[in-house]
Length: 350
Image (tube, rainbow, N blue to C red; front, side):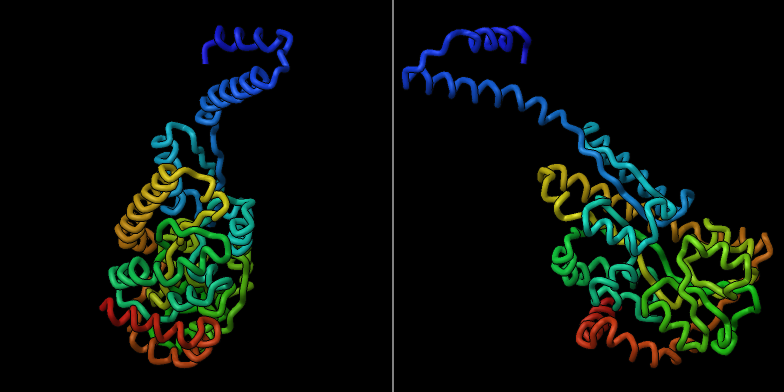
C-alpha cells in the first residue's frame, strides 16, 4: 500500500474512540480490513527456502540435475522458492538424509529404492537381481504402475513422490582379478550399501560382503580393507574409483534410480501452482539426468580404459541362474506377495 493512506489510517487510530456499539464495530471492521490489505503484499513477497540433500558427487549428473531443478524452480516462481543444494553426503549418509527428510529437517532428498526399502518393503522389489533386461525395460516399470503402487506408502511415512531420476545398473569393480564368470567373484570381499538386496546378490555369488558407509569407501579401498565394490558406471567414474581398482565387470546385477521426494508437511504448505512447478521441474531434471547418464556411459568406460582399467562383459544369464538363494532371502525383505505383484509388472512391461 502507499504510505499516505497508511499514515492517514494511523492518525485516525490516534483519535479518541467512540465506544458506542455501532461505531465500535465499524472501527474494528475497518481495522481488520486495512490490516488484511497491508498483509497481502508481504505474504506474496515471502521467500520459501528449502534444502535438497543427496549423495552424488558434485560432478555427477545427479548434482547437475539438482542444480537444473533448483534454478528452474527459482526462475518459474520468480525467486519465491529458493533451493539450497547439499551434494556428496554433506548432511550425512544416504539413509541418514532420508530420515531427515521424513522428519522434515531436510525438505527434499533423492534416495534410491534400496534406501527407501528400509522403510517400505515394496521398494526392495526394484532391487531384485537381474530383474530388468535394459534401461527402457526398467523405465517402463518404475515410471508405470509401480508409482501408483507405492505413492500411498510414501505418504504414510511423510513423503510425497515428485519424479524418478537416475542412478543406473550396478557393476562390479575389484583390485584382484578380472571377472568373467560367477566363480571369479567367489571369495572377494565386496563392499555394498546397507540393505539386503545389495548383499543378497553378491553373497549368492560366493562373495564376502562388508557394509561400509559410502563416505568411507575411498579410504577402505585405498587401504585394502575391501577387495571390491559395486556401483553404476557414472559413480565409478565421477568418484574416480578406477584410480584404485583396475578391474570392472559389467554385470548389471541390480538397477536402481534416484527417487525425488519431498517432505509432505512442506509440500502441503505450498500453493497448487507451486506444487505443479516443483513436479514439472523435477520431471524435466530427471529426464535430462537419465539421458546424461546413459549417453555418457560408453565414453566414460573408454576414458577409464585409457587410464588402465580392464573391462569385461560377462554373460549375465550365467549369473542370474545363481540368484535363487537371493530371491528366497528377498521374499522376507520385500514380501512374497509384493514380489509376485512386481514380477507381474515386469513381465507386462516386456
